[in-house]
Image (cartoon, rainbow, N blue to C red; front, side, top):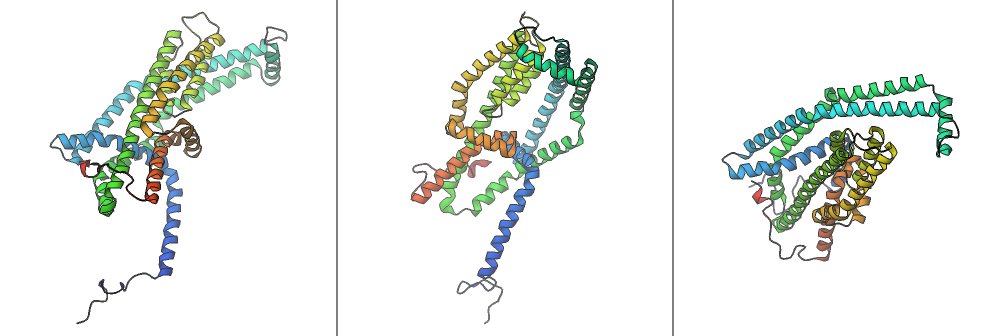
Length: 388
């Protein structure tokens, strides 16, 4: 009886196996394809990363609904996603219109301040005041370059152009398309989570399932703690800056509170950028309640914010990062700088949890090199089995 030449025989080599040269060519081809995929992914990296983060955040309420109600996982995902979209629309309709109005007013104030400063330098005469060493050369430079009318024309053009861009930002088709793509990616990622984890579990050798489950669970906990902590930190910073500017009588407190709250989400450098923003706003806007020179008001606002940042940096941030990723600040700061250099604000935002993942992965690898159980005494978490 003859055997089918196309069937796999356990007694000998599989007749359709590739030879060594073909395997090497295939490996090289896969590596080239991987590099090309990474290069192409760079154009959509922000959408992929933000979509994955959104899916990660929405997964937990969807899983909760699927466990505690008769709804299936798919219906739970749909309900959670609809509630999320309703919340976004409500926030947009409530917050964005006054925020845009405030930004336009702030830009107009900046334009008026620049125009007033230009006129002051045009009218300045050498020998006035204690800052003649600085104002004298600036006045000469402005007089050599501009007239009062030219300054006004340029400021009006700046205010009109920038204000128009802000007002039209919500109507830009490309932005809408990116947001739509991001949410579609997040939705389909969320729906595919069961298949992704089930497939990963099936492909893992039973001997490695416990180790990989523990590693994945540790990373999940770090990402969750980090993002919730950063959101709470952003709310704290935004609320404080809103309160500070309100007490000092500086106009635009709601707008500055929202902007600084968002900037606070950028690790390490965000709070210091906020100090600059608050100083500039105080210098330009002035106070409606305190009889202080704009320079003195800006200095006061900056000093108060510096004290706040120092307290936060000493008491709040170390606990956030320490509990989230268990890494010292001297490791986090270079990581944030590198992340920002590679991917901009997005890289700075995700660099800290990525550092935590790398630390866990390196620790796991070192334990495996030494031999033995990398997680002695730790049971397998219900990370794969308890997803739904």
